[in-house]
Image 1 (cartoon, rainbow, N blue to C red):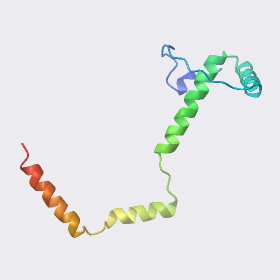
Image 2 (tube, one colour):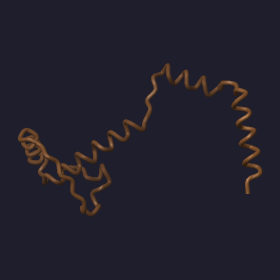
Image 3 (cartoon, rainbow, N blue to C red):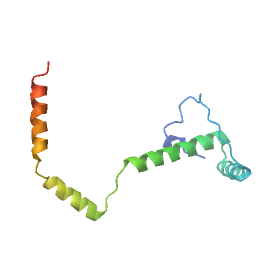
Image 4 (tube, one colour):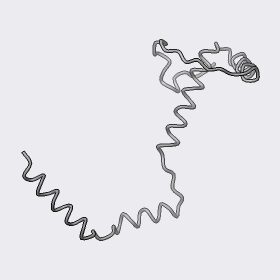
Length: 102
């Protein structure tokens, strides 16, 4: 049986529809999977779509550093570059505007 709690969507009312065109090969694959799991096609598809969407979102929002990248990143945090004259001037301008803002 599918674990619908993985996605957190199991208790949500199903009111939306999405139509997807596909061929016979995918239809047969879906049929085999739903039979093997003993679930309805809509349940299987909702779960598969939710898992894939979560995987894509997590993959695009998480950064994995190599050991060397992590060492370089930590070193940069420990010794940030000196501010440029332009950055100092911009900070002073911002401070004047913010301090005098009503």
